[in-house]
Length: 124
Image (cartoon, rainbow, N blue to C red):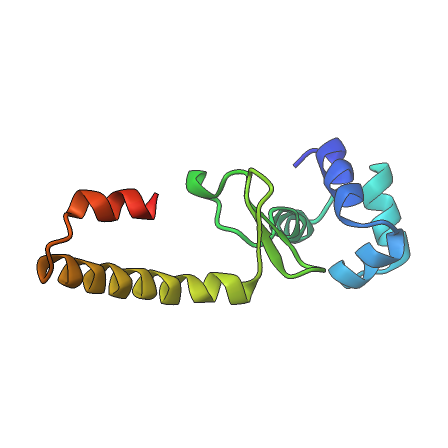
C-alpha cells in the first residue's frame, strides 16, 4: 500500500491520532511517522486498516459496496439499506412463514371453488 492510500484510509476510519494508536497498539510517534511518510508502514498495520475499512467483509465481488458500521452494528448495502443483526437473523423465519402461508392458501384454493386467478388479484 502506498503512503497516500494509507493516509486516506486512516483519516476515513479514525478521527484522531490516538484512535489509531489504540487500534494498532503502537505509540503516538509511530502513527505520526506512518502518516507523514518518514517510516515504512508495517504490512500488518496495512492489512488491519484495510480490514477495518472494508468492515470485515470478505474480499469477494459479491460483497462490493457493502459495509459494516461498527458503532451502530448494522450492515449497509450499496443502495443504503441498513440491516441489524437481529433483522438478518429473522430473514429465515420470515421465509418459513411465507412458505407456510402459501401452502395453506394453495390448500384452500384446491378445496374450494375459488379460482386461483381471483386469489392472485386479491393479493395484488
